[in-house]
Image 1 (tube, one colour):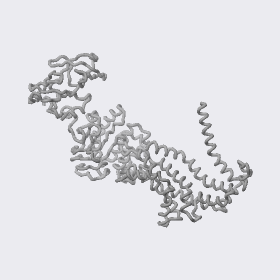
Image 2: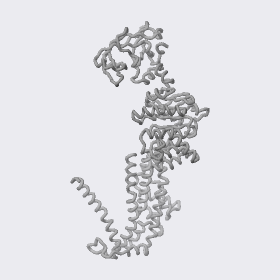
Image 3: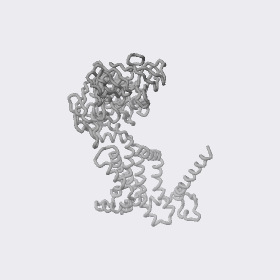
Image 4: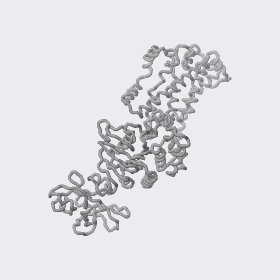
Length: 360
Length: 271
């Protein structure tokens, strides 16, 4: 095993630059998830690490080896694709053995490696089947098995759960986590699904438009987002952002004229400074407290144990999402008192960059 | 069965009968005695079936030699065509190289030029190369058919890039990818293409007629045409010759038609 270092990676196609100088260090044995919206360059980043695309400039270092100019097979990586990319005319066994056979490994070595990987993934009984005779989850396991057999230094996963149904996705997420615990191989995992990122990652890299927005543990990114993009990308429902103006006396005036108390860090803000105030839906407190503001309930999404209230002052305003335990007492049209605890607020400047979180 | 289905079946049977009737009569006449088919009205079946025409054909006229020529040229044409068109079609679909799309567009544009137009320049070219009146000369036009390249390319487009990339990560060279991953997937289209080239080269009349001057090198259709001039009245012998020419490819086609059709359809749908 080895760590991975991506240094100043740039990649363009024609006149369009997809990666605009990305640098990431993945420690030995770490599970790093690259997350971002469609077209942010995350798959391209994975492909340049794999060697399937050439970098325009920058370096890829695996362990202490600069692999930038090496062919994919010489980089010590294995990749699992979104579409599984199994060879349809070969059995599961042959699919998994393919790489070792190309490398002219001995028959016993091939057999041992394939059966070991099959045992880890619980697919020993499928070895004689062709991919067409497998379910989506089984195909995914075979694709992972093919990667394990190569005994790579780095695992690369390109949206591996996107083609699975919701139930299976949850189960495979658990299996990925378990597999990583078992093998301890350095992993770079690309997804657009923030739930996968939050649940699997030791560290998350949020990518937007070919640039890194923030790197950190799931908790860090959730609690201390560096900007509005990261704040809203992680978490469902996403963080509420309210436009406001500092009054210079520890409070902010919202667009509708109501005021809310700001955390201590706002003390330095001059009166009239434009702000964006972020608050996560689960941090809003419903109930009469001092400083609570009245809101009409526009819509209720009941999820069983939890409910999401969409609160709105005026017609056409972006509703404020608020998540709470559903006791069935609130309904559309009700007027509720909602307060925004200063300690739970995130403040962003006019450019959307975090001013620092309350209480820090 | 509904009335509609009955009428469709009946219509299909009728069309099939109209199509196959001349073929059946061809076989029937080939077993008639000399002059029997020239009677009026011509009989449908031989009064006394005989193999005399086939004896004459293979004995006096030496059709065996032409049959071997045809088998040889068609088999070689098929093998060579596959050898060149499969890698070419694959490369046009899946490999990145400068001018790929421009070259392919040029090739496709050339499809609209009738083959006959190219025959004279091709003949002059081969003459300069000293290949006139040789098997090699007869084979050249089959080496890399644009239609074949197009067919293979369209089918290859349906192979996911990720599968080839997985093989590259597994350490396979481009040659190994083509041999071990792509070729097995291409099986239906390879059968289709092989059959298409074999049938086309077997039935080809014009080019062998132009390029082969030596009678010993004649293919069946050319030999048959040459014989028809001196045996124009001998329907029975002519028909026996036609049977020898048609039957092998007819059997081949019937045996492989399932793959042939599925290959053509796959190419069109997936492309």
